[in-house]
Length: 296
Image 1 (cartoon, rainbow, N blue to C red):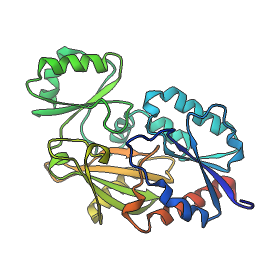
Image 2: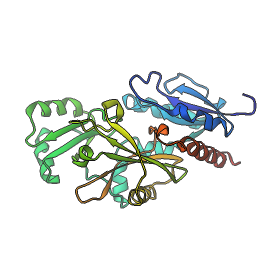
Image 3: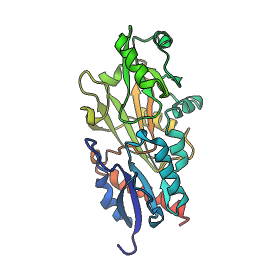
Image 4: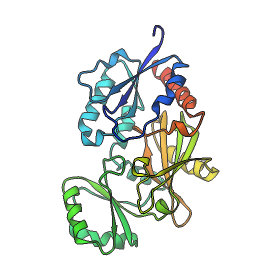
């Protein structure tokens, strides 16, 4: 369309069972002069310079090939298109070690131990370290709860075998299992252009711990409390540069403290369908960020 700015939404070629609703933002983007094209992120030799901006939308299979994913983003950086969020934030948050950085800066995260390789002799010590009867093992690069394993003390031999298979050459981290993940759920707060937009509560299915709807979790729109917003804002104040969009995933521990589970800076599902004004707020923040990047 003549006179429209062009934006590429990086997506999966085949989303499969993933639930998406980014299309709900197309009208709001069009209202600010944007034509949106959905482009599979694995598209070979794509000409990114035909776009004014590129939004990292739903490339949720990037953990299968993070090197290729970063190479694609670097090719976008080398073009005339503006990448939103910036590649520096993507590099920093691609591995979950960004949580360790945030903790070092004073952020309240779920306590974590970090490992490059699995050693079966260390497993019993994890329970002692956290003074916990349940712990969870997670890959340092991953999405959608893939390869996560919940362990109870004592650990069954077959689980040790599974951990050896999954983490022989995959860096991982270990956390105490927060009971409220199952009992209450995970709070997700969305911020666009540094401003709070909306929030949801993700409650796993019975006898499950995964908070994604693809795994049967219930998604419910909520009004975030002042305490939750303040906790999220404190964490975001530790991030530089500031993101155009971000999802802050919080869980409440046994002391009623909100701890960070994830800071989704790359390709968070924004759950636009859960709030009637979310799409417009996203489009506004996106357009304002582009104007800054383009010097307009």
